[in-house]
Amino acid sequence: MSEQKTQTSTITVVKCMSCDYNAEREYKEGDYVMKVEGTCPKDGGKLYIAGIYMKEVRRK
Ligand SMILES: [Zn+2]
Image (cartoon, rainbow, N blue to C red):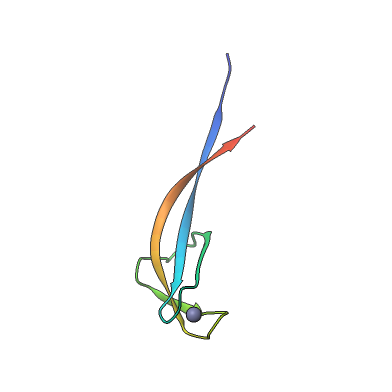
């Protein structure tokens, strides 16, 4: 029997309100879309959560 292990990890997409900065990071408990969180490293603007999605991660 061959077993292919797949794992899903939840990714949070963070965007800046005033410039085009965006980043992805691992989902943390309490994250939700449109939550304002932190400041932008580029221009100090407010960051908000633009989306949360599941990503499949293959493990060998
Ligand atoms: Zn910014």
